[in-house]
Image (cartoon, rainbow, N blue to C red; front, side):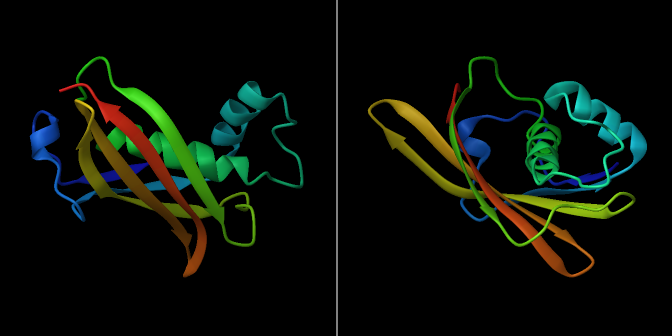
Length: 136
């Protein structure tokens, strides 16, 4: 997995700007990644038919890499997913770009929306939004 990130040394709410690119993460759907995934979902790791849930797993892993270090106490408040046609293939390289889609304070809480897009070889596979209540 390769990682490029434009994040500051410490993540606090004031460091985020709407539209800000947090980083780009690359994954390869290899046998090791399938074994890890099948351990979570009790799915045969070497199945001929891969699941789109691998894309959701890649989105979450990319978010965790680019939004580090995070303050303790953040709350994952929701997520939305838009799937675009197909599951990944064994051996396929995925690129996940993550950016700040929204930022607002409501009722004393600091809300952030992070948008991730997963592409492979020109194909758009998934768009996802992670909604987080930021601790600091």
